[in-house]
Length: 425
Ligand SMILES: Nc1ncnc2c1ncn2[C@@H]1O[C@H](COP(=O)(O)OP(=O)(O)OP(=O)(O)O)[C@@H](O)[C@H]1O
Ligand SMILES: [Mg+2]
Image (cartoon, rainbow, N blue to C red):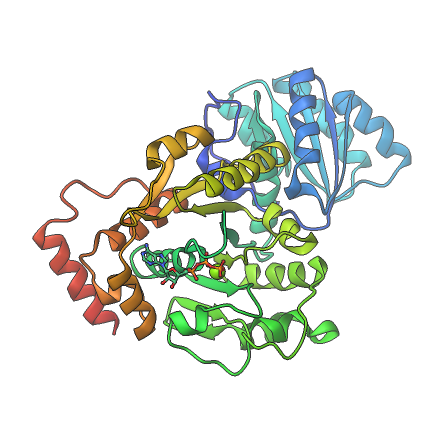
């Protein structure tokens, strides 16, 4: 067991961005938690109800180390035991000694303590404790700690999924998903895969001017043949850092998908690529709803009119209600400023949803039409376009990176970007 925990003061009981980033879907493990205070009990109960622990078998109870020792005298130990202890120093170490007598060697132990004590932390480490968290904690802190255990164990750490959905059909959700993914890979140098989940009509292949003979449908319908090597083979390398899962975009069959088949493909793809962008079709059925709900982050793309506002509001309400411990969705207003169209001002639109505006992209039919017809991204068609900056900034915000340095759009910065692009070619 290794302990990679660095002492941090938890001023905020709620998860910060780094915990949010670290907390992904946990594997099928068993977890038992024994608390001493109501606050920690409540945080862990909330972690248990969170989507990221949906695969685990998790129980939470009061009683602390004493209850755990009592139980494990009779019962087998789970994969992870979480113990809250108000005791510090020698008393805690003695308690853990008693636990060690009844606990399997493979069981990982996380302690939630109330003492910020470096000596104690070292002693816990030498006794094989996996993580030491200092109360108060939020539900996502606990999930992030468990995720770290599995990353440390050398198991593949799941990449993050980012679903992009339109509040209405045709508002540019796919255009945003593709350009955002491109910016993430080209400008932020992340490894990214884009999965086109609009099986009958998706345009990822067209937009990137790629025509692989196989794609996402071959994975979704692979049945028993589905495994990591198949996904690896089907992920089409568009550039060194960007892979595509294109849609068949043919109508020779129906696409009534089962969520489980889509989920399996997403799960495996996430172990192969750190950032998986899901280009969602504008549909609402069991598999699209569940796929959306289980994404790590969600980008809602809307055009600034009343129908979009109503739909976006319904989406935001549902997401807020069912994903209490997740980040708010990111709102992108697209096709802003269509001549003669009465519009809701973007800031008002965002304020009505109680969201910050993550990006605002103008309606530019010439630019977007040329890019689409040439199978190019906007920044390839016109690197200096405002929309190129908007996609880059959106990528930064979603990846949790600080703002671009001031003057990033100076002549020198543009020149550097140009040099980088020609080097990448
Ligand atoms: N800001 C923009 N300015 C002008 N045209 C745009 C803009 N954004 C997208 N478009 C165009 O709008 C059309 C629809 O875009 P896209 O296919 O991305 O929408 P969508 O929301 O994914 O649609 P669907 O509901 O079919 O999935 C495309 O022709 C695209 O080039
Ligand atoms: Mg689309």
